[in-house]
Image (cartoon, rainbow, N blue to C red; front, side, top):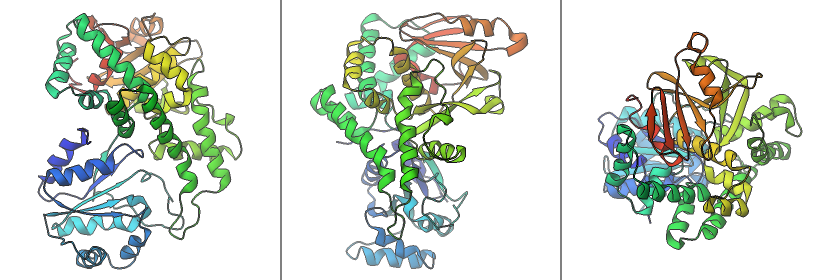
Length: 451
């Protein structure tokens, strides 16, 4: 079963462009890249030629010499003797393209040639030196890049059977700042708890849709996360040698295992010195690896919650959040998942709801920061929203927003700020403060300039 994804419209619009660059789809493993590209080919009646450089490393040899388009098409045709490669009718799909840097380099020639529809995808494209000993440059400016995430709550609703009009009606409540009727409000709250339990990996969502069993979906989630965690230890270079030394694999896994520990801490900052083994550079490199593999994201502290936020970020102070809430719940175990499903989380509920808010914000394409001072002033998240620095306070239920109110009362020091409170609320708006329920956080990525 294929679930409708947000990349679908992007790909359908891309193929209509004249003089288009080859498409490059990047994102965490198991987010649905390959399935979406195959469905795109089917939807647009394209013959599909798929070259997976991980499962079929012999394909790499076809790119070792001349990258002339006619030469490449001849090489590819020899790999698929029973298939015709027809200009503008065949999709040439390079999967796991990070394993063949010269295939990505060929994008420059494919773009200039203009006869062929080309898409590449991969999960490790941001990692320098992924193929040891290969110094092939990336063809900057010759690919149309799409950063794909796992399914967000909106896509989860589509998978569950809700159509776009139904979801848009929910968005309209936010746009008009109207109270959501209790029956609708409670329905979405319960669905959001399901999403919180299992996250957005398509394989996991499919298991839940088919079985309606959180336990069964959680077992699939655990398997998915385990494969992701151990994948970097299994990767080989083009000569068949391990990409990482055992000490490097250990450090990367150490970062991964420490994520729930730091999420549970009061200020949630990730302290690099707590990692085992290696120099400070090695430890930072392990964190960066997981970031470039789209498994985690860094959320930086800022010196002031004022625009531009990127200009005031503190490089040495950051939190680390997994890019999918399912990674978080997998780490906390089935008992925590059971508590989430029943709405009975204890002291750890703040951790889960903050990670959920990040999940929604990140998947909405919003750059996220936080603000923390030694004085005790602490803001969960700070974003740029509709031209203003906007404070986000995330509460499991409802709660005090003392730090935010302190900042808003002193524009002479912090500048003009607004506040969005995310919690067990309905929608309301008073002055520069908006309250929304947790399940509506994804809406912040829509109509961002209608505050």
